[in-house]
Length: 199
Length: 295
Image (cartoon, rainbow over all chains, first blue to last red; front, side, top):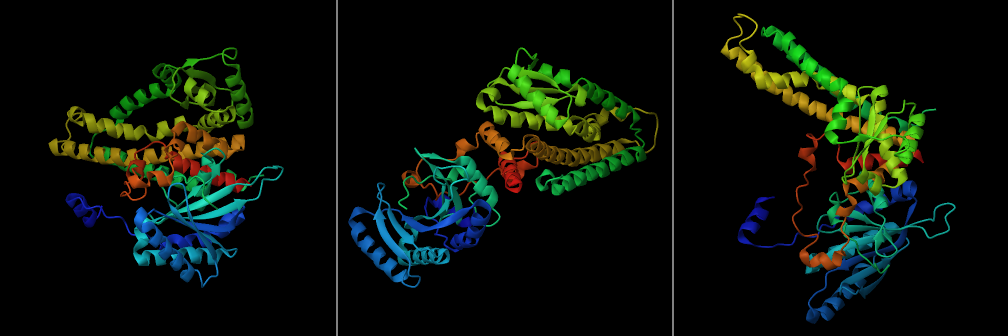
């Protein structure tokens, strides 16, 4: 605990940590290993999830974010859409078959949002990876999400199964495999699921 | 044919280095004791006989203190069958099999050599684990027997125990052994201080060695069963590490600042050097890595 945190506790100030966007890029080098040693391919979809803003400010914020997205995704020509979910959280969803461009877009948009004072609203960024069905297995392959926690600057794996179950052993395996290549959240108590990710 | 994942040179290197350091500390201690005129013979005999009893009766002592009772083949046919098969693969004589009536999931092996060994499991672990997972845990315990961990750890902790007794009782032993000029009051305090230092250093080294033996037994289990990930999932079940992964949606706990609280200092780094077992997460990580290397 630093001096600032200490003073904050003494004075009862609560300050939200600044969003850390710099570690976002770790996923682009890690994706090579994910593909070669785990057979996980980037699905070409990624998203940013934001905290809802007070209902009155919502429409104007949405408009502003829409403009920001249009402006900032111009360079990479990434497709995007905005969506609201049942928790009233806003999602910016990106589609780009070029993974580098996808990461660049997510980074650029989160930077821009931060620059416009939405930094504290950023909840997480998510990348989806798909695996081929295992040999001899007719079912679908696994869907793996890497969730980036902006406040900690770390990623954690999320592998949903049907019926709000998750594949914990595989998540541990993902961590064991990837923790040398990307900042993986060490504290599993922070591996919160996100059900019904809209991509 | 030796496969890549069957060996861990790093682990073997660290084990040898730890044993070497332990030997250095012990030799220093014995040299110090004889220089300072306290003939360690008396203490050696005392501690030696004490530990010999412990060593030769370890199987009975452990069975008594844990409340485990030895079961015959007809009482627990499945458990016996599993252990018989694993022993055939590991090329071990079959140990005695014991069961502890306890809901706490646990398993242990003891005995001074391969012919006098006991493997015990609790009823809790048999309920909690699938047959394959139980097999992996039993293979871990059999690896302890195969690696002669009981003997290794007894020898490794012998002089440490000696230092411990010096630390506690040097005041009483100070007056014994006839007149020697060097053994005045100052000498006893010095012996006491050195004993403390030797005990602390050797304690930490023994703990490190014990953790390396655990990794080695995990590795042994993986080699016997050929499935490191099954032991990993057994460890996850036993330790409850999976229950620590939250099940509540991030968005619904966001109001409670799920991500935003100051990260708790994880108790791993400092407590790690005092523990006899490596953290479950580290063991799982290693097993998963072995699983990777097998493919």
